[in-house]
Image (cartoon, rainbow, N blue to C red; front, top):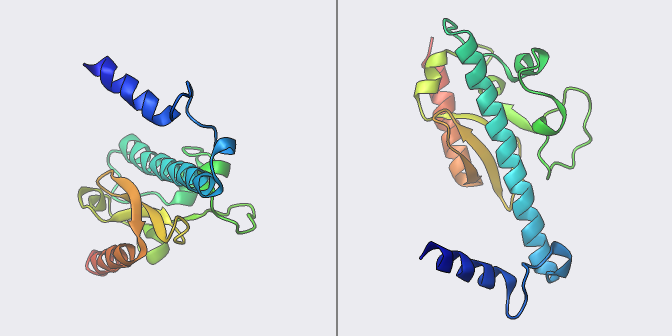
Length: 168
């Protein structure tokens, strides 16, 4: 049964009479843009996952830490590499040393962020602009990473700001 489903998927992807799925160069122009945009959004989402994992790794290494490390401190300690992991593939801003396409909870406050935030479902890291068809890649404290429409993002950002005002 599973092999039949896989075969049907291959046929659907390949198109009529073709044995391989189409390459980006073979897609119509609109298809190319969609294919490339989807790939870039996937890369951006993966970058956010790596940043999220670095927060968790650092928190795990310092079990008694009361506060989260900043993104810059994760780079400085080489827990996360700089370069591609900090740049959204849709970001056309000139990149200077230390530049990141992403923002974190640290960009909203000068206070230290208590590790208890990881027990909430607030946003933790996000793309600094809606670069993916009006959406942003967002990583939540609970581990979920997804594209979020701008209106929903702004609502979640206000919720986070309110949480931060009421902590400490």
